[in-house]
Length: 460
Ligand code: UGA
Image (cartoon, rainbow, N blue to C red; front, top):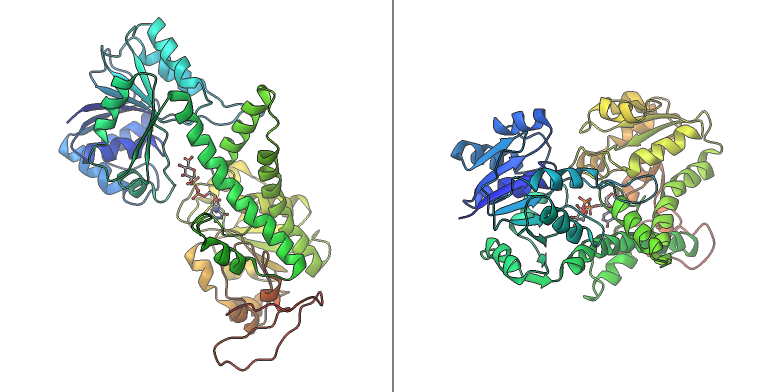
């Protein structure tokens, strides 16, 4: 078993620290946030991540997991993982201040032969720079291995313990081999490459996933005008193993703390070196447009949104997390607010203060029916399970205008319409009441497309 230190106990670092401790390693977590360190030291998990609380409590209780808010005089660990935040600056560049500070703090306290393993998402070339700084400021023998993380919020513990792949990049084969020994019992391919390639794999992976979503969203916009159903298009495409079914859910687009920053940082890095990454630019632009589509769909039904009362269902950037960073739901809420609408955001998984501290002009409501009273529309923006079971009849009764714009294509259009709602979604004009619905033996009147083009089988 190894001695491991993890610098940065945030969303990724804490998972790495607790998971390694659960495998029997001795782990020291270091974070400059004292309150976080105090909570962790008592076995209390400061972030919402399924399975992490139990793992953290076990680790602390067993004595295999300890935390410090300051760097000790000497770190005895064989491996020092860096997992600090690298947000985006307004220019598009990555903010590497936390990483630089961690590197400077580490240099004088690293023990000889320790391998520094970087997990933070960093511009290509950064690990080389970390190594240079370490070697010139106190740790002449330091080597760095890039080990990008592919953890999804809400599924991070499982992603770490049962990964699809482990990517290790280094210019030092011996160090790379030592880090790979930490993962020898994992049932996953270990992909070894040079350090810059590993850094790029992380960006390319996130950019590709964001592109996949923007792609299906662009197809959804085309479906909207041509009368096809994007859900079925995605289903049919996804059966091709070269395409795959995942990340083809059309909607109001991607957000969170990773895709927006990583796609922007990659495009910025490319532009710095004279490469016009036009596809990446398009990926971002399509994503932005998906938010605007909601406004257009609302306008088509209610006319000017100024003065309208709209309830936005969801604040987090995706379900099963309270994280609101770059949340598509809140971007839609903001667009509506700036358009003059009265906006009420409902998401009982997110602390209202977290929303209003960032967006003081938004109102957070905890009572759905109260918020919907007199409303002109509901916009489903984050697909929390409870929004899939809305009290439709009651909502239709209290709303001024029973209209739902389903920004995640998750509601059953027939049920919603049967409750008296006008239903609008993304890329499924048939589901909006314009297609011909043919389903198992249920007798229903064929409905024709509003745009008069070819008919659509909305379900079959
Ligand atoms: C993402 C990647 O999926 C992880 O592999 C990566 O490790 C992580 O970023 C990171 O760089 O740290 P995460 O930000 O947790 O993970 O979120 P995702 O589950 O990927 O979802 C991102 C956004 O895409 C969400 O807003 C989600 O609603 C949206 N999405 C996802 C869609 O709109 N459609 C889809 O089909 C899938």
